[in-house]
Length: 402
Image: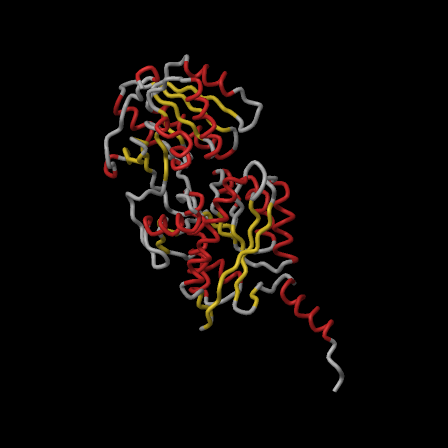
C-alpha cells in the first residue's frame, strides 16, 4: 500500500472547505460571515451589531444548537473589519465567499457597505440577512438573496407630525435631514404628508462631518420659530445635533429624533436629556416573545449581564437576524444555500424583536412605530395614542426656566 501523502491530503481537505459551491461546515459548526465597521468613525454602531450577532450565537449554542439532518450544529461567525470604509466591503465579502468558503452572510453595519456588496451577493447566489435600513430606491432592482430584518415604512415619523397637530392647529415644522439616500427618503415622505395637510415645513440637510456648520444651521432654524424639530440621521449624528442644541441653549417646543440610543443619551446628558422624543420600533411596551430567549425584558437582562450596558436597537435586530438563520436552517433541513434562501423567502417567525416575515421586496413586514419621550430620565411611550403609557410634555420648558 503506497504511503499516504499527508501534505496532499490536507490540501484536499482545505480545498473542500474553501472552494466555492461548498458550504463552510466544519465538524459540528456552521460558519456565517460578516464584514462590519469594527474600527474607524462608524465603529460605535458596528460594535453594537457585532455584540448582537455574537449574543444570538451564544444563546443558540448554549440551548443545543441547530438541528439539521438529525444532527446538532453550533454557529460561529467569521468577521472582517472594513475599518469604516464601505469601499473595502466588496473585496472582504468576496474573500469570505470565494476563499473562505462562507455560504451564509450577515449584513454589514453600514448601509453604504450593504449597497456595495449587494451585486456580489446576487452574482454568487449567497443568502444574506441584513439588519441595516436601506433606501427605498433599491426595491425595483429585485434582489433575490438579501433579506432585510429592519424595515422603515413609507410613513416613518408621520406619528410625530400627527402628534404636533394635536397640540397646535397650524404647526411650523423644521426637518434636519442627514444627507444620504435613507434619510432623504424619510424627509421627502414627511414633506409629501405635510403638503397634503398644508403644514409649513422648512427642510435643511446636514452631513455627518466637518463640512456642515452645525451651530450656524441650528441658529438659522431657531429664527423660524418652529414648533417641531425632527432630526433624521443615524444615532451618532442625531446625538451630535442634540449636544449642539443643548450647548447653544436653543429653545425648541418639541424635538423628535429618528434614531435614538436613549440609554447613551441619558448616560451622557443626564437630566438634560429630558423631554427629547425618540422614534423606535422596539420597546418594552410591546412584549413580542420567542422560544429562543423570551421577550424584550429577557433579552435586556441577558444583554446587560453579558456586555454591561443596555441593548440598543442595533444589537437587538442583529440578534433577531441570527434567530432567523436558525429557523431557516431547521426548516430547510439542509446546508444548500438555495434551500436556505427559499426558507428565508417563506419565513414566518416571531422573535423578541418582533415578527420576521419578508414581503416581495425581501423587507420585513414589521412597521410599528412608537414615539417615547424621556421624562425624569425614563422612556415613556406618548404615541400612538392606543399604545401610549403617559402624556406628552409639551412644550419643552425654556432653558431659562429649568
